[in-house]
Image 1 (tube, rainbow, N blue to C red):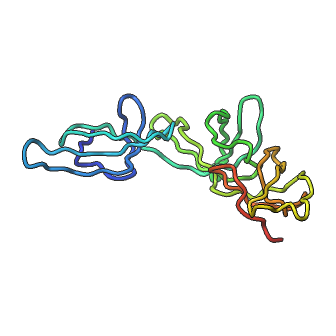
Image 2: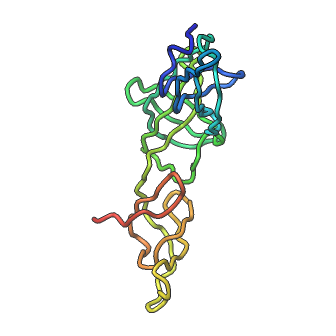
Image 3: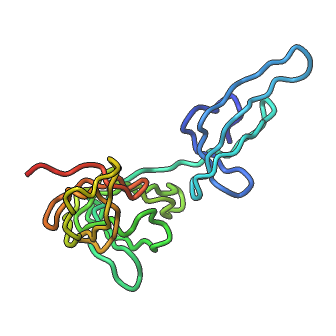
Amino acid sequence: MATTADIKNGLCIEYNDQLFSIVSFQHVKPGKGPAFVRTKLKNVKTGKVIDNTFNSGVRINVVRIERRQYQYLYKDEMGFNFMHTETFDQISIPEAMLDNPGLLKEGNIVEISFHAELETPLTVEMPPFVELLVTYTEPGDRGNTATSTAQKPATLETGAEIMVPIFINTGDTIKVDTRDNSYSERVKK
């Protein structure tokens, strides 16, 4: 068991029967009264950030989290199947744990966070950008650029549909931002 003196950024603790990562903390010693630690805690599963204040010296339960690289293999009725890049162990993850499963292509490398003592997966973090082939999009109309942000829908090789600029054509490879499902740039061949 650790105390508030052991708090540091990135530390994962158990609080109110949930896992939180410490985003920031500040040790405060007021003129009157006992010292305390003001923290911002990020829920590991939901990503929600909360503010919390701990009295100085209070015991906290530190949880060890391990981040491991896995390669996406395939999807079946059990969920998404991944293989550890070093040990070749395979694991199945339910679709609800993935932020943008429609952008996941076979062979992509993701980072899965595990609760070290329980060996249970907590989160799946996709790479910030993925390169995908545009399998279908309507041809862009010349002169249809009243605004500089003219966009049209495009279907990608994974089946996902996103909005792309009108100069993107079927067969182009584009870079997609996995955090907000948006077009980033065209990949040069």
